[in-house]
Length: 191
Image (cartoon, rainbow, N blue to C red; front, side, top):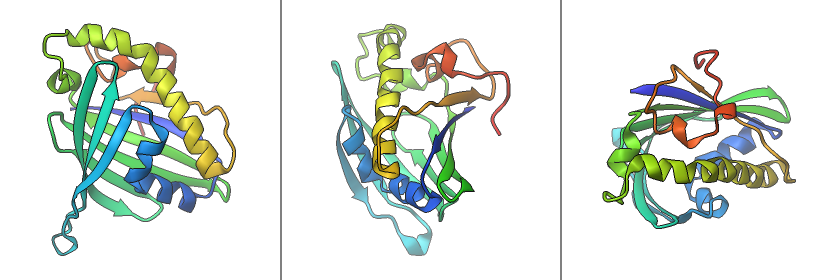
């Protein structure tokens, strides 16, 4: 498993940012590529099991349903989740209160760098070519989602910048290949 951290800033109180990201069903409103989100399992609080969702993605001729489970939550500090279908991905949203109206957000990802090949619903279409086609869409989409989220959480739209810090850049890393090189900061390892 490889590790990367995606970082951005939100100019809103940590409580507001945390609650917004914790509501997984919000994601459908902000991504034009998410067509539906369904809670498929409520989990079991007595067994310390979180709920599970199916998320339908549609882009170009690609249609894919991801399944994600909430693993652990610490109010206003972190939200940990895991993809439970097809690919090996674990994520952890972390929230750092900089001041009353500024929150640093970090999304830690542990992933199989060849994961896109496992989830490619177009087995006849080479994953490498699919990534080349998707690359400009990935950055544009990330910026669009971050702009919409900023408008909702902060009260007005703005351009939001982000940085991806991989533990180590590797040839053939399909996750990193989805983003422009100027967004990847491999000069330091993730914190």
